[in-house]
Image 1 (tube, rainbow, N blue to C red):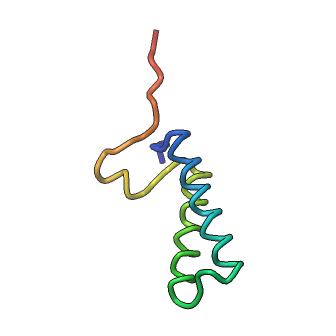
Image 2: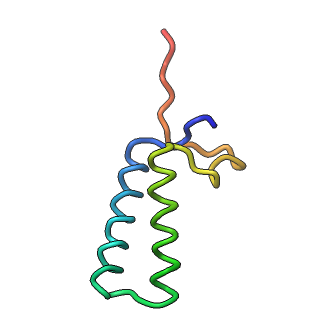
Image 3: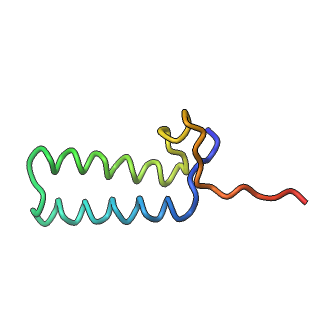
Length: 70
């Protein structure tokens, strides 16, 4: 798996996951919606740590800056 996520993308995903977790554990979001959002938050955390988004790959999309070769 070639990394396809840049630093900003990873940070945004972690922030969104943290917000969802806070809302879930404070009882603001509950039920089925809460569970679905927590699963999505877990996916965001995993993809952030791996620097790879499986949805970007089929489209050839990347937010990672390519290093220039001198």
